View 1 (spheres, one colour):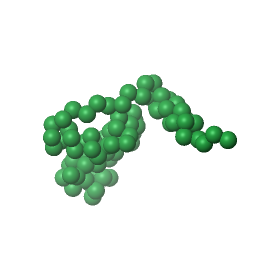
View 2 (cartoon, helix red, strand yellow):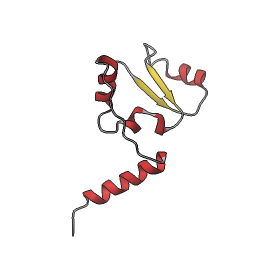
View 3 (tube, one colour):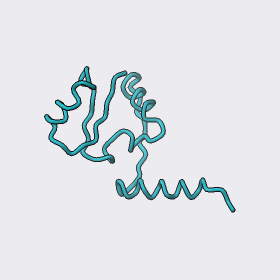
View 4 (tube, helix red, strand yellow):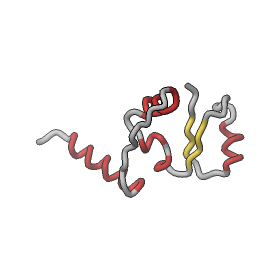
Length: 87
């Protein structure tokens, strides 16, 4: 499975030219923000989600962080606090 996701705000044509050596088969997605990427929607199982939707036609439920990047950061802080050992 050849899949590449690019998160960048540069011009579409410029990005295509820049990433052409790495995306041989044109199997890539370009996102302007992290919130739009597969990594944001499927943080622990990105490859599994792409394989299930691409090969098996199965819909994989996305994680809804709420409030975009700020919501994602809040969740990470909460998870880190949960994982800290009690003293």
